[in-house]
Structures are given as C-alpha cells and as structure tokens.
Length: 250
Image: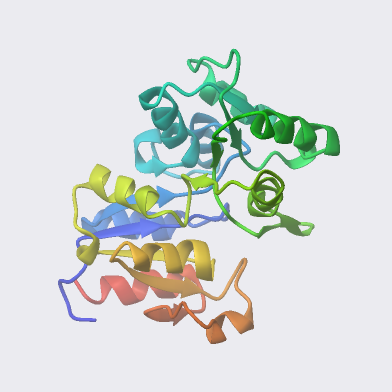
C-alpha cells in the first residue's frame, strides 16, 4: 500500500477505550465513518453511549441500518410490521405502521420469541408479494458473556418459511457501504474498511470496491483466514496496528 492512497477511513467500532486512536485518525485529516449494524438502540443513543465513554463522535459520523430502512419505507410507501428491539422502535416514529404491507426485522434480542416470529410470519405469508427488510445479515455477534445469534439466523427462518428473499439494508449490503461513501464524498477506491467480521465487514466492503482489513479480535476466528470466498487485503492483530499501518501511508 503506497503513501497517499488513503483519502478516507471507514472504521468499525467496538465499545472499548480507543480515544487516542480516534484522536490520531482525526488529527491526520482522514475522513472517518463509523459503520455499525447496531439495531438494539437508536443512532442517537448509540452515539450518546460512545460520547459517555469519552469518544469525540457525532450522529452525523455514524452510518446505521435503521435510518436507511426508514428512507426505503418512505420512498416505497411501505408500512412495516416491526420485529426489532424495543429500544430501536423510536427510529420508526415517523413511519406509518397501520395495516402493514412489509416486515422489518432487526436484532430483537429477547423479542425473538416464537410468538413474535410467528406473527411476522403470518404478516408475510398473507401477502401476495411479501416484502421482508432485514437490518443486517449477521450470523452472530460477541458480547461480554459470549457469542449470541444475530438477526441473520431469524431472517433466514422467515425467508425459508415464506419463500421470500430479504432485502438487507445493513452490512454486508453494497448500498450500505455506498451510502457511507456518499456521505463522506469519496470513491470506494480511496477508502478502507477495518472490521472483525470476515463476511459482513471485509466481504461487504470489497464487493463495493473498497479495500478491507480484518482485525484479529472480536468476532474473528482463525478459520476466517481460510475463507473460501473472502480474502482481506491485510490482517492486523488490533485496531492500533491497523491505524499505524494506514497513517504510515500518508
């Protein structure tokens, strides 16, 4: 990677004390975007949590699935049945939800009960042309108490039951990354994604024309390095190493 090739940085954030790294990136003049599939909180509350930890971050610097889904719903006059986390519901406050003609599914956590999934199934199966919008396609994610099933597992269940293909608006969808790039005003060839998810972070970004670095933390598994379809442009052991590599190219 040659000096001067990075004009922006899409940065996947884990909630850990990374204040000095963030300061170094911003001080370098690189454009920065926090790309998250967070669907258990509104974007405002997500940012407040980071700010409370000392991060210098604004809502405008975060690309998240729910606002993107709301734009689609308005553009297509869709009225969603929501299967999402209770804390995410305020994102859809301005959306008409009467007489649903689609289902929006996110990481609903404890709301992923049989009754709630079956209700979403009934909404979809009753449509002539069912519309399922998923706020991501992740298989699992990591929290302090271990790995947990992500929205993708439940999305696949509804796809199978209703013979429908979901429209994914979070990572790894190309439109998600294209939206972040457009907001920064840079082409894909001048951006790099840093993330721990071989499919959603690395694979999604590369399909959009970006380069991508996988961090060997979080969701990373050693078997990722033998993935049959996705090959990161580089591996790093932690985010500090990733930032070092990028800033050395300026």
